[in-house]
Length: 318
Image 1: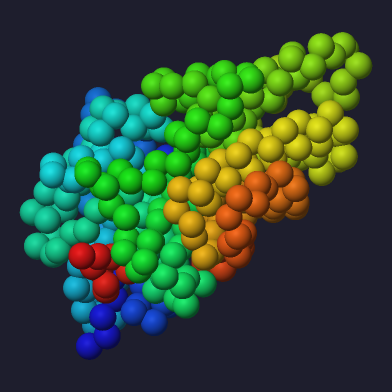
Image 2 (image 1 turned 135 degrees about the vertical axis):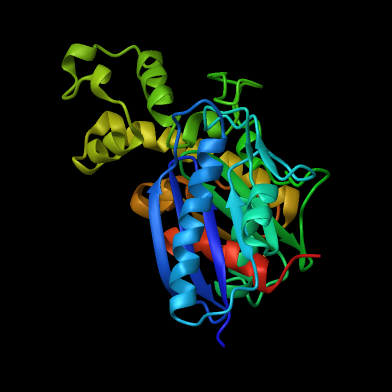
């Protein structure tokens, strides 16, 4: 009987559940928007259970054996209780995960931060197989990271190590981060959720005559719209993305001196869908205090976190 893991990617925007084999084949996958309306975080818990039931039914029909459920989630996480707590990216104070799923399915359930899982997935399914020191960075709705140092997965006191999106990388603009806990955080400028706000702030800081622009500032609601303007070669937008590049470089410079990786693997929607405005825009601003690591975009693409979830089941971290 072939073993397949139930892999769950609980993101700020999307919720995905998949069946993945030990050889790295995605057998079945379901994707929906992450629920954000309801009285409590149990609306997310209940949706997780519903999707897992569907995929377990598929597995039974095809005679697959399920050794466990791996869940990669936005944070912060309370690992003792198995919950998401006070996440800035969803409107619920807590989302119970481990205990409800254990009670329902009678299977081992593993819960890790999404980027911690992703770097573990890169180690077993991706381009990290040959390396002992690996960093995974996602630039998406938020910014986060996962680290393997000397073949050890960094976990931290409460499992929230490598929250690199909250590295302080700026004092010039001094913007309050979406976490509401500090200013100048990397995530507060370069993440998908916060880039439009930074764009408008930056435009005002340039002292421009807005009536001369070829677009309406008020209509810019998403980072996708900013990149669409960049593809139209709007000069002021390209100039802004160079500023974003400097800030991304500052964040990655911090990562390099903090963890001394052999390889940095980048993922997340901002990187995957706009790579021509990401790597070329931050590479000129690297500080070469340490030898530069190899820097690549994940070959696992948008499924990197799902592969991370599967790797938790097949190769549980110590």
